[in-house]
Length: 386
Image 1 (tube, rainbow, N blue to C red):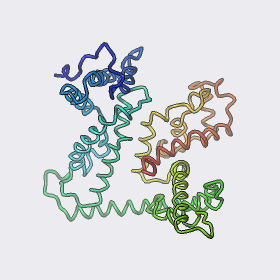
Image 2 (cartoon, helix red, strand yellow):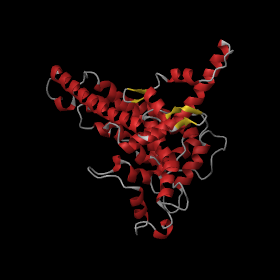
Image 3 (cartoon, rainbow, N blue to C red):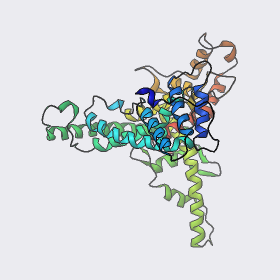
Image 4 (cartoon, helix red, strand yellow):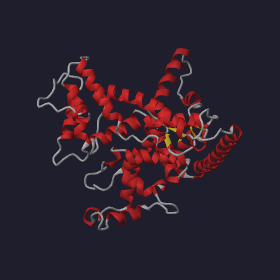
């Protein structure tokens, strides 16, 4: 049975005009690495793509090969539901996971020929990450969890599956969980506000030609429900948008529209990543948010790329794992910049490569090259950017 689902790869390349030709080339390179591919599933993946790329579009055989590919990727270990296994919402989440997975994989097959661009060691591993992150398999499941965790579920929880549920007790337990979460968020928000009001970081100008727009002003104006909200964004645009005294209503509308786009772009590209990185350093997120961000960083192939060729060990992920509290064991502090330099000069790395690296230089590498990339990952997880 398995053999029929893994067709033999063709000896001839497909038509360059075939819509699957681009991804065929990429998969071919992964499947024919020398020595053998890091992930042996890459060869199986390529055989399915190869079979599709050699069939006329919309032909019966083309559709059949698409079906074979779907069965193959359906069995890959996405593990998007792993955090909920054994919990009291396991049953409804398991049922919904199947529906979400089917819809996301259908989207994956539709977009893979044009939008999937693996960069890591494993074609299959990159595909799993792409489905979980970019196509939002994990986030859709988390959205479903947030929805059912705020209501009394109709389904019987895993722990009570053999007995009739006591809805009154269940309601009290949910309310208790929500109350604990609210207290936890309020405590973290208070710490966040204190940092904003007391630290010089927040007085930095947001846009160079707009000295009144500082990180502190934006954070305090946009803060809502423990995160940076957008409900007062238009008011800020109206306040700071330069308007000529004799401007017509149409000109005012156009000016504000342009200014809105400008500020919005700056928010997404620079402000959100910097503020979110600051909060990660201060550990000012809930455990659920920390878990989401930590896993996104750990699974990001792009964060494994060195920021300088002459410093191969210094990647955004390496620096995050050493500097951010969420990667440290319980009751253990992150390393300092000086301690990271000592680590890089140890036998584990290469003393000669890093002997001239000093603290100001490594701090600059973190601030300019690594922290923005970490912040963008956090922004994606928390849906501050597309």
